[in-house]
Image (cartoon, rainbow, N blue to C red; front, top):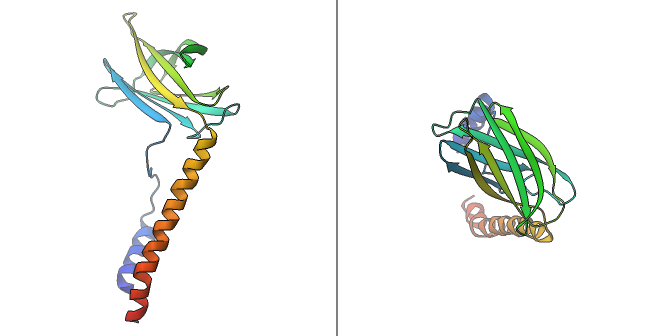
Length: 165
């Protein structure tokens, strides 16, 4: 048993993980229409109303290669009413990050308009949520469930291990 633990620790020390993603961001989405795939996310995952958040956007072709240049405009809706907009602009490279402040808590609909070379506009629609009181409850419920599962696991298996010694 000690040998396995030694090998595991040695592997973790000698071959560190430089990048790992445990899960997709909660407040993220992707859409494929035409020849482009658009991914959008917020940082932090649960932005709060009234505080600055970063909107992360990634545009690729169908083979998942970054688009070299694209023209994009965004319309932001809340309760089916347009509350904000970002005029069309040209972005070099497949990534675009910008700061945005959500005025109200709740669900916002981002309509991302990609402008093609032929003048055709393709609209990708995304739901982006802001932090509400229920967001904190969600985090606490998940953490409580994980702690409860660990306690049950320990209660069941720990006495068996101690009896063997």
